[in-house]
Length: 257
Image 1 (cartoon, rainbow, N blue to C red):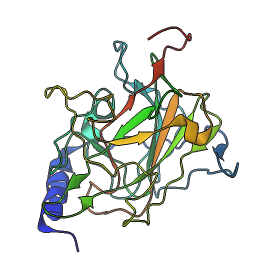
Image 2: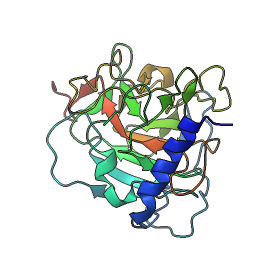
Image 3: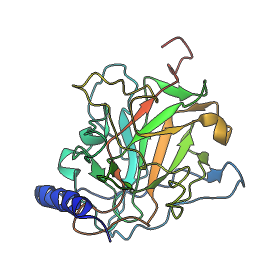
């Protein structure tokens, strides 16, 4: 049973989401999804929605300055109990994280719902394999006072061309082990107004991913898929995406950032 704090946080999300508009639900089919360990086709399951569209959603926030954050949404499909954050979409998942600290979940997020997914593209600064963590994914996990982390998990996949995908190993059933390899397991400390760097894995919070773990030297696209093993109810179900940031980056032309 979740603590009263976790329950109140979820109720707050549901209450805030009531006025969000419903967006069309395109379904992604960007080619084979290749598991780095097995070469298997990961695919994308139907998230339980009725509407479908093209694989390229083409959703962005207009001209953006060069920065380390996601620039464009290329595909998405919301699952059951999604809805929160859709009234601010796509801006809510583009740009820097808006963390609320160790013990509070941010409301600057987009709920994917059960089995929902979203694909983000970097257009000005691509993630490259460098020392240590190359990408940071920010959700709104928080530590319950005197207790465990309240986490809602997603699988992370990366691609350089949008067709061949490499999946980070993720075990959403291993709570005692901290859901190894999954996104959505660490609170977010960085926010635009607190001076904490959103690209420094030692202080930013969020979950770090090393491209070397999947054998990829560069990634232009990041796909996040709700694991289906989270909390679902109201319009704030599942993985709640705040932002994605490049730690080790390079411009598309291969020059210096």
